[in-house]
Image (cartoon, rainbow, N blue to C red; front, side, top):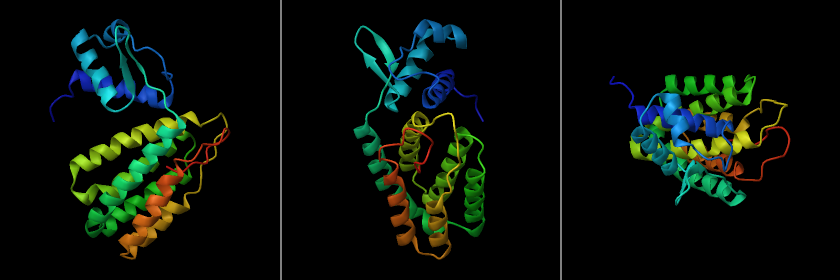
Length: 212
């Protein structure tokens, strides 16, 4: 495979820091500092900032440059509603192509989430489950949009995390998997939509109990 463009690598690394909260909402993205860190000129750094902006992770303020975007309760609900609609569409197209092997991998992802020792590991397992059941839809633009929304969801998830962590038991994922094994895509899509919409509810201030 060709090497990853530098702007993409910078964007990917900054996105990971923003999602995890290492770069806080409202914090300025200093072009000179980031260019020096990555040994880059300002051109790929500006392109990386634009990529972050297109994903809703940064905003460009006239004469002030880029800063990390914040988010409101309304935005959390909006992302959940968008994800529910798009993931239902993807699942309906993917369901006829889901093989037993893929469903077995999805079940392994559920187990990994149940046994996660921290929120980062849980989020990786959660996102893997969604990718596995949606990937065979054969609609790359739709999947890219869903992936961008998952990044936004991860920000909300991490913002509600506190020092104590307890991996949630994900009954919804199991119900979705059971319906897919039973060749009942309508039931699977209904549970999936309900599951995602629940993530748009106000997060608890302690612990992490929001599905994603």
